[in-house]
Image: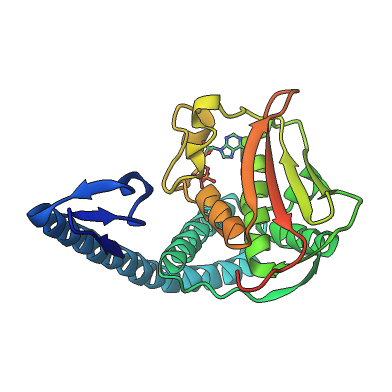
Length: 269
Ligand code: ADP
């Protein structure tokens, strides 16, 4: 994707920073070689991630199976089994995030667009979260308003799961988190997830949506297993739906994460 001119070559679209840079002769060859090399490295990295994640997923699924047997034998309240179960769930979530990111990088995510009732979706989601941790359901205030949107249900569920689990993790222990769904004009819906936790400093409000970013200064972050992929997966999925995602301060302390999505599916995502 380069445009040749008599005086030199203007490289476009490789990277916004490179727009309008004039290069000549060998410089062009070097840049193109570097670009090809980087592209190949990126593909190798992505394939490595997919293979590794798949290899880890199989033993984790087997461990989960044995854990179910142990739970039946020793009861759900066994502290050791619960700790193993929580950590196995954490690892499965990380592996799934890696697979989703790698598939998106390879353009291999298939979106199945359907009509979704936000209330139905959230109800199902809470049931599933309660299977991971039974007290979570009581810690969430759900919206009363329903909205219908056309989107890939699995993607939107993933976005909401990542936001809700983060809000629960970082919230003040005695507070509930609050989810709201509103119509934002005619064409968009606005979903928000509000917590009363540690909050996010202004200087990291944008970069926490990048891959592998954790706000390590937070004492809470150190208490939780994670790879800093949850928000990045969520933002990419929202973007695939032509939506937007951002975070603001909760005026009462804590954070509010927003997801703005088109109500109607316009052509291919
Ligand atoms: P992780 O899986 O490591 O939690 P995320 O991408 O979901 O990664 O989040 C990135 C970082 O953003 C977290 O490590 C945490 O520091 C910060 N963060 C995310 N959500 C919240 C929240 N609701 N309140 C405070 N900090 C948050």
